[in-house]
Image 1 (tube, rainbow, N blue to C red):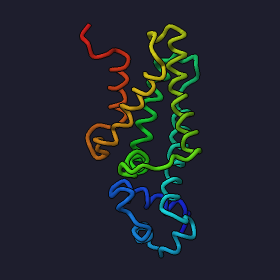
Image 2 (image 1 turned 135 degrees about the vertical axis):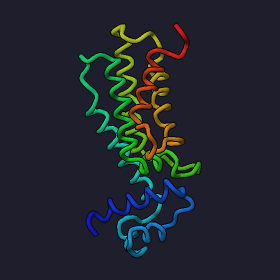
Image 3 (image 1 turned 90 degrees about the horizontal axis):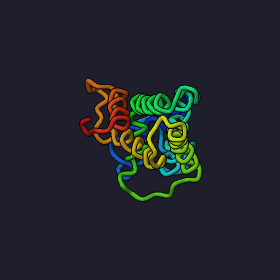
Image 4 (image 1 turned 90 degrees about the vertical axis):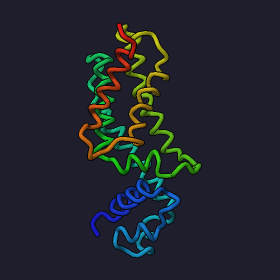
Length: 190
């Protein structure tokens, strides 16, 4: 099998996204890949380790994708925030099952968050906070709590995992445009 770790992670991610963590066994993962359970154990000692690997990988790739897309400070905070939101939505749609696994694959079970996951999540949210705080300082955005605005933007984007249809007529970036418009202009009539 080419790229066995990646193949196992991809299959596990799909199973976790569709059936949840608790309902997916290592035997299910092995069957989806077409190998024995022992072969899966060779790469991952537990199902939990597989899940943690999926989460760390998807978070790092999300951070890399979005940070590469965001233009430099001179572009202005509104442009930078809009671009970050669009890049987040684009990444979500391109990596749909892994992203659903990231946010919902554990099916509401409590779990220990690894230090790697916590660090990447904090760095990612800080990127959004910094864009917003810089815009507030420059007078491009109204005075607001940058942490609250960042969490609001990320919450809207992440909630798409509950209802977005990757086979639907609208793309995730179109919803990101709508969300940015609501953040930028509100919903009250002028």
